[in-house]
Image (cartoon, rainbow, N blue to C red; front, side, top):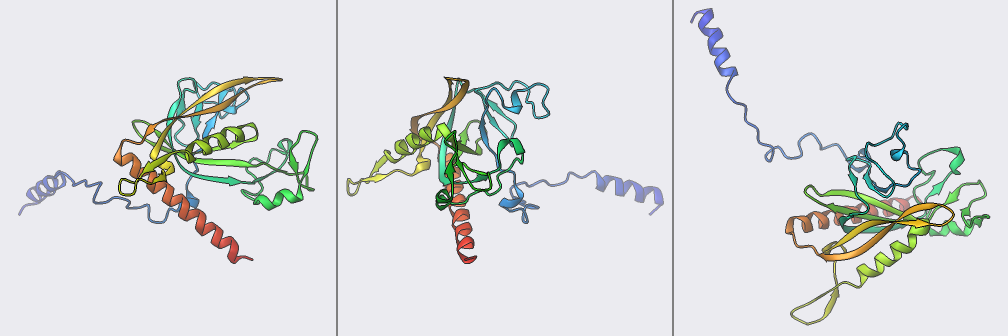
Amino acid sequence: MSQETSDLTVKKEGNLPAEMNFLQDAGAGLENIDKGDLALPFLKLLQAGSDETKKKHANYVEGAEAGMFYNTVTKRLYSGEKGIEIIPCYYKLTFPEWAPFERKEGRPVSPDRGPEILAKTKKDSSGKDVLDNGNQIIKTANHFVIINGEKPEKALMAMKSTQLKVSRGWNSLMQDQFETDPKTSKALPAPMFSRVYNLSSVENSGSFTWHGYRVSLARKVDNASLYQMAKEFHGSLKNSNAASENKEESNY
């Protein structure tokens, strides 16, 4: 075979279509990525003072306005007035320790000191729980949800301060949902992730203007794939929390 023929043969073989099978290779390359390597997506309710609404700020997001919802990972904005649909999957109350705002340390000093830490705090003039070192304990209601849409997104809603009242009302609403067992006619608590809720924002006025959450029941989940996604998200968070608690107990 001549060199010319050999080159032609190689060229022909090189042009054969490569096989792409994304399903067969599902998850390949992601084996060593665990939850600690992922950015936690927050569903943030933007305020007038949020960096995302300031055009000259480095974190400005085009089109962002106070009262909108913002996914900090996907960078997607949602209308607070129109609202969005969410499916709650997991709930946890935490007691993070924060440095005073003026120190601008960003992330909490500790993500969760537990409810017992409140015994070591004193109320300051504004009613905040403060430790002897000057740091604050900010009681936070964490609602892990799926944002329902063309492409469902997982996110965390962190409610604190005045929004704790909204959180308690939402929890009560979720506990009031039941399913009837056809065999026994007994009413059983419905899974948290079996219901779709409407989430919107509402403007509040006082000494200053701020936006809060508004949550209302929409309907039962009517999509099997979406329900399975929510169920798996719940299971993952539940297992992760159990593992974290077991690790803390083993440290004592």
